[in-house]
Image 1 (cartoon, rainbow, N blue to C red):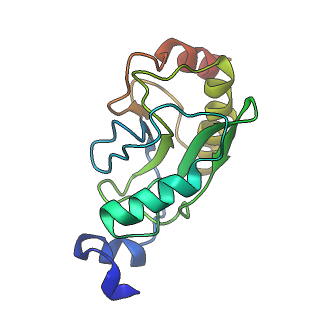
Image 2: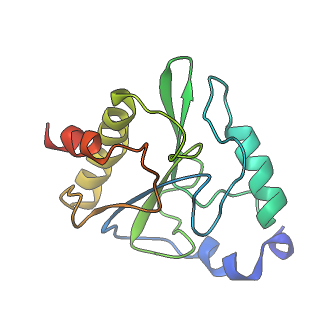
Image 3: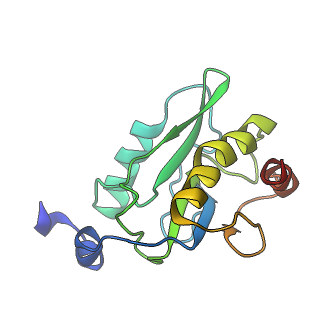
Length: 159
């Protein structure tokens, strides 16, 4: 299995984190390092298996790089944890990565998405790693489209 991993990942599997400075939120379609072309719209199906298959096909690895994957299913947002939190992301060892399935410049999100991201990811991780959730310094949005409403996430954090 070790020989199947891309060379640039090898040291990331063995390196464990002890501290987190913040969270980066991205989507699957517009991701800078690992774009996934399908699905464009997160529909009412479980798409995590499709993401796994495409990631393995495109990047030759079966361990997803994101710590949390958010998808829409049965009129609710489900949060998966496909990567152990203490295993660092390939580009930034001090951050946790959240990926929303789909293209945030075309998909539409309800307030529930922002509430779930805050209540199930940002709040517990900020308490665990002792950082203040703040959109200016510790919560970063990476290449998200215009349909991701930053104000809704800000309102969820403020409550």
